[in-house]
Image (cartoon, rainbow, N blue to C red; front, side):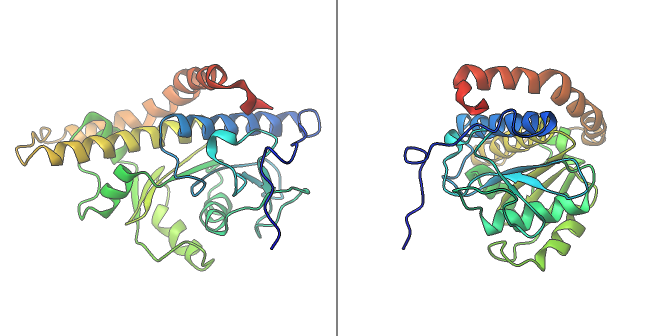
Length: 261
């Protein structure tokens, strides 16, 4: 059996200057998102995915190499795949079939879903397994609660037939709980998808902590979850694109600028 290459064994040539300027920027932003997910401890070894669609009629998108840890992902190592999951350019890496199923479904169905993030954190899985899903217990939960969808578990997502049901359940929402599985977010930019998943993950973590502290929970006044959801609908987009993501990108460079190579 052929052994998969590792970064220490294969030199990954830089693609900077060899792909379009717009694609390179997307590669850098996506690689930064992988590094930041690892920094916050939301990675699951090599088993979850973030992707971004490359503008153009081909519907190509970038996905992580299946055998790299998130802290190893670089802009040049990201794999460009087509709608059938095949690499567009030669690569020493492979991609995850489950990642292709979930991400290709959303990229092909939603023009605004330029970026997709999917995680398997313990807190996200716990809330996804809770009968009531995400509860409006915190401001963070209420900010994303109005944009939340659900998709029932069907097994490891390798069946292409699931794509139609996944897309139907997501609808026009920006965040989703994959029941008994994990969390997902979509955005017009990588930064927007990142901030949405950040808020969803923080809300899930807070909910698990609140429920573990006992049953004397303070529920928000009637109407306030709806008001907060309306505020989040516009506020998160502005925060992502103009405030939080530029700051997070600077943080990624401070952590390890090699992601941008």
